[in-house]
Image 1 (cartoon, rainbow, N blue to C red):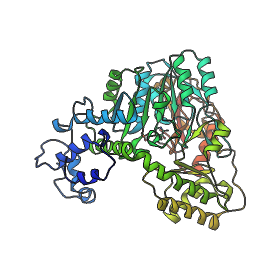
Image 2 (cartoon, protein in one colour):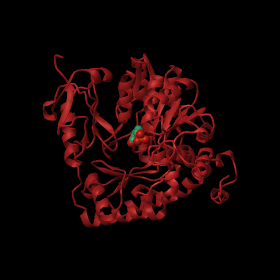
Image 3 (cartoon, helix red, strand yellow):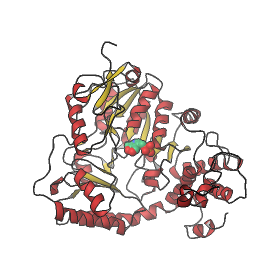
Image 4 (tube, rainbow, N blue to C red):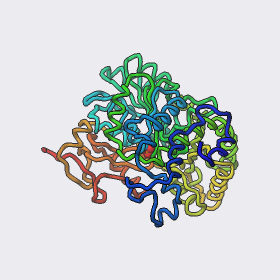
Length: 499
Ligand SMILES: Cc1ncc(COP(=O)(O)O)c(C=O)c1O
């Protein structure tokens, strides 16, 4: 083993195979080798000093290399990447694990394209991430949307209910695949075990967008991770909650409902041929951390979060979203590492509190909605970091709080847009750009989206309703950045009439 890492590892838990980091160790070893690179990348291991090297440092530049014998090849792994992926598969309890270097987005596209042929019916929550909608366009799958449970009090949506999914499966016996977001951005989790049981009885493959749940399997006790619940394929953003570098994710496959050969083929179509070794190496390190220390770190974190929740609510009009509430109101479980705080009770919108936290107290939240703000807590947080958030919230209530509760009819989109054209057909149809105010009744060829959370207001093939237009204006006024694929301001691309 390479020097320097030895001491670090000596402090770890007892050796298991999860202690190994084959890819990361090979990468560090290579970076320390006296080699003259005549391969790409052209910075040649950071040969010349420039601002990038100055800030990132010698070792980072030397580790930014391309595939070669010593370091394996992501598209056809044979040695250290293969070994690292096998260790990952073991840690997550799956048959196969794949390293992803373009985020969970690429995993979602791959799961959909591998599981659905053009025309196959895919059941999907309407509040799914934009990558799901893009997977539908790319694969040519026919979406059957399920409306999630709407929480008007917190102004957010939760996951889909078991009853709703079951009804949809009965109404659509042609359904081949079901996609579940687990947990949702805000941390809600449907009874996935029951959903998988029902789906599998009907020969329906269950794929999971687990972008926000990389940590679930490594938490103490009470939470079920998607693989234990019976899912066939899951993609997790290790970079979001698992500790790896941004853009690195994992695709996890269990059972043989989706052939491994198909997965690797689709991945090789979608991923770069120059996979970033810093990203892949970080997956190796993050997997080791979670497998070796996850349970202990999350056990230590839980009382810190509980204490913070109490402190936020004490003598205040803030309210924190809690597992008991989600269970009672929506029969779903809840990931307590997501701190969703209802702030409209103190007379401010989530957007206002989000900005105040950043501008006045240097606290960056994950996102804001009309009534809430959300913090993502991970095992890298401490009593001190969480304490800063609590302190800032208290100060904001004191200094900026108003008497009246903020209420808005626009705070949550609970309307189901009518899908009149298959998203792929809409994507390829003749199109034109129109002002959003003139778009009522037209078929969208565009995705209107608020990021974060990246959930579309309208997708290609849907009819543009008055609600879509109102929601657009609401987010434009409160956030100022509804994302469209159209260059002109306040315009949307629609299908040409009589085309
Ligand atoms: C629910 C959900 N799914 C998928 C994604 C895509 O993940 P990534 O950014 O890792 O590509 C996101 C990103 O925010 C998300 O929120």
